[in-house]
Structures are given as structure tokens and as C-alpha cells.
Image (cartoon, rainbow, N blue to C red; front, side, top):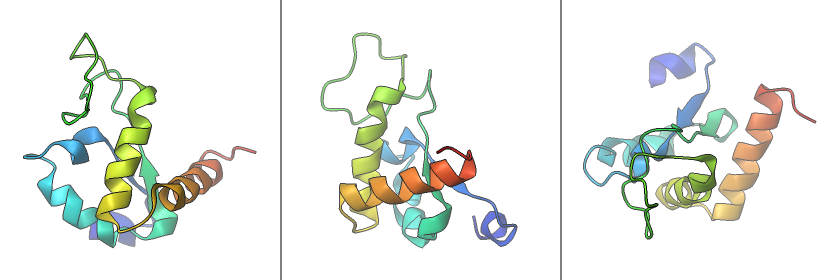
Length: 100
């Protein structure tokens, strides 16, 4: 991750962080991502967050509607409120994609 940050790249965190086994290392790493380089992704249409409280009927279908769940997990790992993390990642997406 440090090598990517040194190159000036952004780091996108997906629902993988919600996997209690495979995402464990991400829970530690996400704390070290500078706020101005953090983005959230869905991995849609695959890789559904494993810890959704109410999984969809089709367990293979992921969609952007699950971003708030990923957001809450990232915020908790970074010791931020979900509102703070949402504001940071929204501003980053607007800047990165040159959105109004």
C-alpha cells in the first residue's frame, strides 16, 4: 500500500474489509490511508460483503446499495464517525472523477 501511496495513487476499499477472515489485514491498513486518498468501492456485481445483517436473496449479487455498510465498517476501523468518512470519501470521489 505504501508503494501505491508513494506513487500518488488513491486507495479504494471494497466490501472485502467486511470479511471477518480475509479482510482482517485491511482493518489495520485502512487506518494508515491518508484521508485525501481514501475511496470506497462496491466490487459490484460480485464479492458481497459477508457480514451484511440481512443478505440479499441472491448471495452472489453485490450492488452499490451496500456502500453504506462498507462505509460504516471503514469509519469504525478509522475511529471516525460514518458522517466524517462519508464526507471525506465523497469529496475524494468528486475530485478524482471531476464531478460537480
